[in-house]
Image (cartoon, rainbow, N blue to C red; front, side):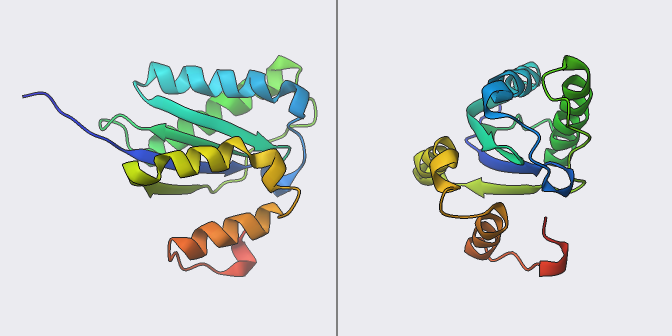
Amino acid sequence: MDSYRSTTYHIVIVTKYRAKVIPDKESHHLYNYLWGILRNRNCHLYRINGIEDHIHIVCDIHPSIAVADLVKELKVASSKWMKHSGLFPDFCAWSPGYGVFTYSKADRSTVINYVKNQQIHHKRATFREEFRKILDDFGVAYDDRFLP
């Protein structure tokens, strides 16, 4: 029998010190690069978007891949690429941590639309407010001192 799955992961990664170093006019290059990594790892990208200091990825992760390993690969590879591409001259690194949350198939379109509308959303809320709300919605305990 083959293996079957239906998973929806929402990954959030932040630039070091939340530096605003991902210009909107160049972000699509980064998103395409990350999409290539996901595709090469047999993952399915549903949506990717963000603003100058963080990105959101909604995807299905192949069951042979540990989430932490995939996030590490995305951050390490994109960090090297961003530094050498010339498109992100102020980028120095991603923040060491990340957020990852799972959604049911019934909620997939909600999180996809949420990520799709990041630019609009961040006219009303800061990243810190956004991330706190996600953590609270999922019942994740956190120490505010360590939030990005």
